[in-house]
Image (cartoon, rainbow, N blue to C red; front, side, top):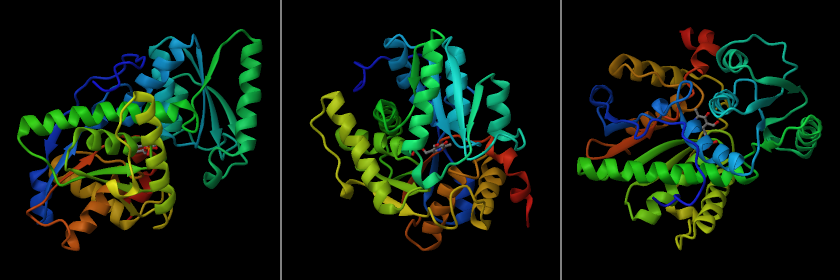
Length: 337
Ligand SMILES: Cc1ncc(COP(=O)(O)O)c(C=O)c1O
């Protein structure tokens, strides 16, 4: 395995299944669709994070840290899973919930990370466009200092720091897992659709597939950054990680595609297309997609089918990166006609 030299904590049940979705394909009348069931990686409700935290908290433990301190938005899957992972590894989880004073309803992920017993701080004055702005970083650092004074050794979980590279590495390992599944099935799909936020997860598949020589083209569905920024971030994480792993492979923008849906109509907003994608997958396959990441990515895939770019001679795999608790936080939007 390409990442064997990195410290890794055990948090997942791998490999996750790779399942065909024949009824969904038939209903759409287009490409053969498969779903990589990373909603079943482990921890609470699975997703891409258990893979990521195996390497990130493996690194934290190797450094002797006993506390994670993690900033993110109020419905963050990342905050739920970092807390579950810390609990499993005997660490303390401190969260900085951004963009809220903490008075909103405890629903979806915000219910779950409270049930998981995270210690919660808030940072209300926050803007998604400046995710890791200097004010937030300074706040986290001051908070970390108060825990150091209490005898803890904190690890700042932040994709702008080492965690980004390690999250990419986790998905290089996922790419190796998928490549073995493709080989066992005797197939090499045309496309791998991955919902793209920070770009960490997508970068691991892009680097892994390129290094392994797979022809399957990774298609990021950019949900937070503009296309240019998302491409830049994927390339940056991939090449930092390639260097860390001692690989000769380097990633360039032309190695993958990025569909830009981030401003249609904005991060986390449930559109009629997302509702349709969630319902089609649920009704035809009995699989629940989340409305923020995978519902959007599946909606983008469906759009490609309807525009004739993913015909019956094509095969596309969606990586289901989890996030299912957001269904409960978005119940009203999802039931709207
Ligand atoms: C369920 C889910 N899918 C996909 C992503 C995007 O992953 P990345 O930030 O690595 O691009 C996230 C990130 O928060 C997520 O929670």
